[in-house]
Structure formats: C-alpha cells, structure tokens
Length: 117
Image (tube, rainbow, N blue to C red; front, side, top):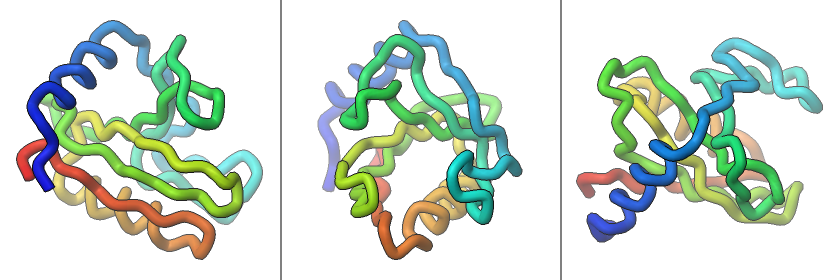
C-alpha cells in the first residue's frame, strides 16, 4: 500500500516544527518492564499528542540523512490503544530491529509502512 506524498509531507512538517526528545536511548530498559531493552533510540515529539495522550512516538536511527521514510502502525492490547511511531533516519538494519521489537510481544503488534512502498 502506497501512502500519498501529502501524508509524508505533513509528517516532514510536523517533525521539522517539533523538538525530538529521546527519553529511552538505545540499550536502555523500559521503565515498567526492565526485560524490554530498546534496540534504537526511542522518544517523542515535544508538544504533540498521540492516542495515549503523550507526545507522538519516534524511533531515531543512525542514518546521517535523518529522513522520515517509514512509520510503524501499532496495536497495544495491554494499553488498549493504537498509534503510529515515526521512524527518522533508520537504516534497513534498524528498521528490521524495530519491526522485531514491536512484534516480539504477545500484547503488541505492528506493521511498517515505508515511504517508497
């Protein structure tokens, strides 16, 4: 499924107008579930709102271009919500790690939508 260019342009504008806050760096443990370790820097866009009432979630990778080229659409059965998580500057290896991280829990599942799909 190919998302319209206007979707990606809107995400570009949102991220450009927002401060990225990384509150869970790569290698850090989840605050409530210490066995869950973040595989890529994870955080949120300051002064934005997602379904859970918090900032819109982001994964920030190591690609120097820092281009937004994918989102993860997630369903969390534990929190009983659904969200998108914006992938910024993620390499193909980081995208695979994020996909596995998202789908390795029995309570969370997600699909990755790529910009160029």
